[in-house]
Amino acid sequence: MTTTFTMINDGAELSESEQLTQQSVAAMEELDVVEEQSVDYTQLDKKGFVNLLENQLVIAKSEGAKPADFKRTDEILKEVKVFFDQIKKTERDEAEQHYIAETGSDEGFEFKPDDLSQRFDSLYRQIKDVKNHYFQDLEKSKDKNFTVKTQLLQRLRELVDADEANSMNPATSWQEFKKIQDEWKSAGNIASPHNSTLWATFHALIDRYYSNRNIYFELKELDRKKNLQLKGELVEKVEALAKSLEGKALSRGVLEEANAHFEEYKHIGPGPKAEQELLWQRMKSALDVLYDARRAQTEDQKQLLSQNYEIKSKIYEALVPFTAFTSSSINEWNEKTKEVVALQEQWVNAKGQMLRDEGRELSKKFWATLKTFFHNKGEFFRQLEAKREQNLKLKTELCEAVEGILAAGEDSSSNTDKVIALQKQWKQIGQVPEKFKDSIFDRFKKACDAYFDRKRAKNSEVEKEFVENLTKKQALCEKIESGAKAGEASLSDLNAFKSEWAGIGFVPKKDMQAINKRYIDAVNAYVSAIGKLSSKEREQVILENEVSMVADGESSRSLQRKEMDIRRRMTQIENDLTIWQNNIEFFGRSKNGEKVRAEFVKKIEVAQKQLADFKHQLKIIREAL
Image (cartoon, rainbow, N blue to C red; front, side, top):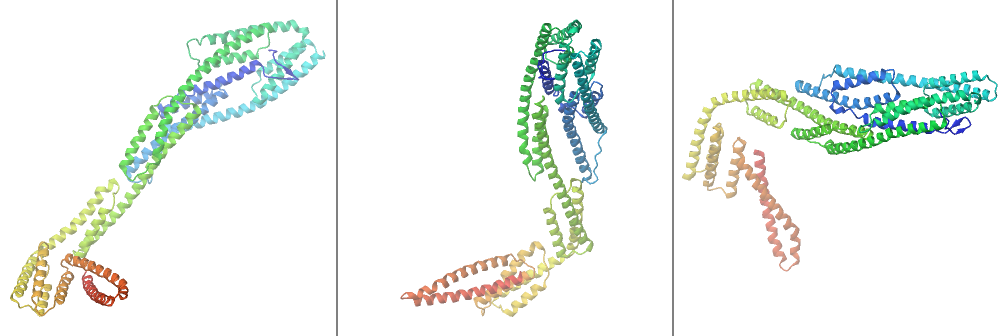
């Protein structure tokens, strides 16, 4: 073993070889950063992920599996689980949407994972179990190895102490010494906080033993020469690996092989000092070439990974605003979905890996954001479907209402108004689920058509009577018009005419407005011909006649216009009264104030009388309406 340690009691500082060992570990970790990214998971389907886990299970169960292998496997599991779960989620959502499209509801929907999904989950659990058992056994082994090496150090210390006191047979001492060396080499790893201390103590005790073994110097020299030869062979192998890099990229296999030779180099005992130092420099130079190549390669790879990260970061930033999108329009949701899917395709097509930690975090955020958008979209369609189900219920109730009116067999005007009102309600209700759209409309239309067809059939029977009534009303209008022209008008005859008109039934709808207008014009002319009536009485009689027309179900449009005119005039009079009443007190202060005040008092009295008349007329109109 090498004797380049600085001893402090039985301990020592880290040797140059141990420092190089740490450099080796760091280089291997850097290699992990790059080579773990060699698989583009976005390009794998479910079968590809299952094959990947089967390979990882084989590696985990192999006899030569190391902690680094399990570390890489664990990282792979974490990454592929996200992608595989996304595939399963997409399949489930598609299956659910298909189920809803067929049934109209998600009630009773069940999604059973296929064989590949079950196989993936089984492999995932097996790998986790193998990993847990391995590290449990490894910890137990490290504890055991720590005890073994501690005991070996105690034996070695006792041997060195006995040798220094010359209390032990030199041959027996040498045999025990070699035995302890072999047992130490065979003992496995221990927990890292104790490893350096135990190694330093072991090397220090070995140096003490060799220093005190002057009697076996020749044997020691022979052993050192043999060690020198073995170390020389290992140095040549590492130098060959370094030379093989010319014009090539450093692979993980090459670095692992070099580290294995270096580990064997460290376990070989010391050689002649001068030659050993030269060998050590050669070994260090060869390893430096490998580690420098690894660092350069890692830097190039990191730059490429950073560029990929920037590209995907921009895609993620473009996706984020879609999580706040909301709309009540299906078309707008579909348009936004196209844009989101386009961004997803950009993400997938942006091939190339990213920095491990940053890339993993960015991927999580991207897929989480994508999931949020589709969750919001799904919630919109779930609410829309619920609203359509409610609309279906409302339209079904309308169908039942029309069918109930139809079953009653009454074709009254009130029932007709109800059916028309139900038709208006139908138009105000929104869409129903697509699969019920035609059937519910056909049901409602069929019921409404049946009602109006039956009503039209009955109306044809009374149409003839309506024509006869029109003839009677035309004759009555001629009679009233003749009486007005002859100057023989009287209130008694007018009341008789009104009674006769009220006794005549309905006329065809197309002639109703014309005959009503002719009647009103005839009555107005007749009233004007009654000489003993004042203008106010004539206006009252005419108004009452129009009111009676409305009460009999005739045209109310003209009466409504008159009502609006009365209200307008009432408002004007009320405004004038307010102004006059507020200002009348001021007129008494001037010279001619009393005269002006009297004029305004008279105006107020006239206006109040007019307002009372208008209120009376309005009351008659409102009673008729």
